Image 1 (tube, rainbow, N blue to C red):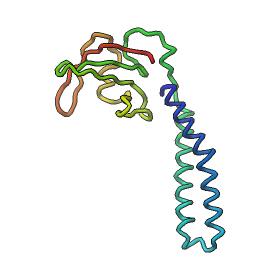
Image 2 (image 1 turned 180 degrees about the vertical axis):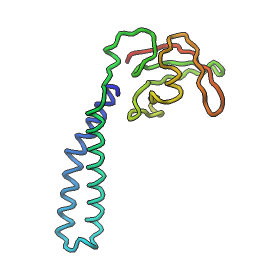
Image 3 (image 1 turned 135 degrees about the vertical axis):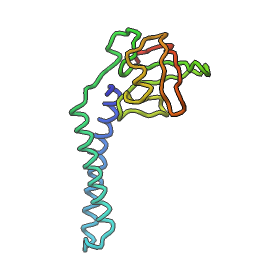
Image 4 (image 1 turned 45 degrees about the horizontal axis):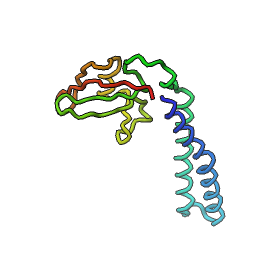
Length: 153
């Protein structure tokens, strides 16, 4: 994952542990104080939410412990497309320019122009250089892109 992706996960983990977990513990304590737990919907909801939060905490901790963080700004620019780089492309059919950053699965968000390293576009781009033409297989047919720039930002 990229350094910004690691920071994003660490922030979420801190929020879950520092804010959400104590809030749920308090909600469970309040629901218990109301008496009979078998028919207490607030208690049941709080326990379900606690399970979700604990599961998410475990998932994030697992990802962070196994992650290999790559800070692309520390890698010398070579003009080659690698994990973490931001790539400017031109669609050769429509002359439309588009920019993508190649990131890990957890970080990908097409609205932010971040695509997964496992996506068809990223797989076609990895290892290519500036001015190379790549063919991306899409459901609507093959699309040709020219790599205009590769940035380490």
